[in-house]
Length: 205
Image 1 (tube, rainbow, N blue to C red):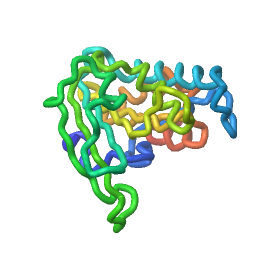
Image 2 (image 1 turned 180 degrees about the horizontal axis):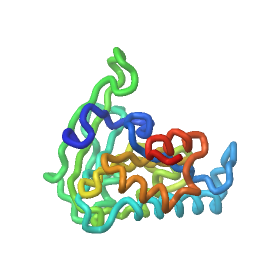
Image 3 (image 1 turned 30 degrees about the vertical axis):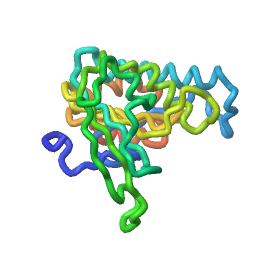
Image 4 (image 1 turned 90 degrees about the vertical axis):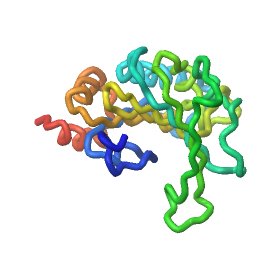
């Protein structure tokens, strides 16, 4: 992270935190508001998210899976939480815990987050369940539901993946060729609002 993404802090919106990245639209059909019982809508968002993950990660890639949770209590993130359960064979001693302050609100003493960092292989992560949980973030009582931030750092491909909710996800990278290959493969899913900036970053005329 320090070598390839020097000076960058992992927080949303990830795309605007770095000078080389992609922002994808997961909504096959724009809906506002979204009806929480619209299974067709959620399945289509999830399908795009899963496809994008599989374009960014191969099973043998070494990754950091990072979980950020707004501190509702003083204790660290519970070992039994849903995100941890999606990592095959995870042991308690494989998790590094940190506390982060004032990530989004400088000067606010209540802006405190618990962070968990896990180094593993992409193939050990049940990524489909992670994507499903993130797509349900804002739609209680849909289940499973993840109400934490999830960042996945691919150490082999030098990129970071963050799905922020059912609407979209960001991928940033240190290798322009890899980012360009993902852009080419999923060009039609690029969020139109940021397309010109992305093409400028990639030197596309």
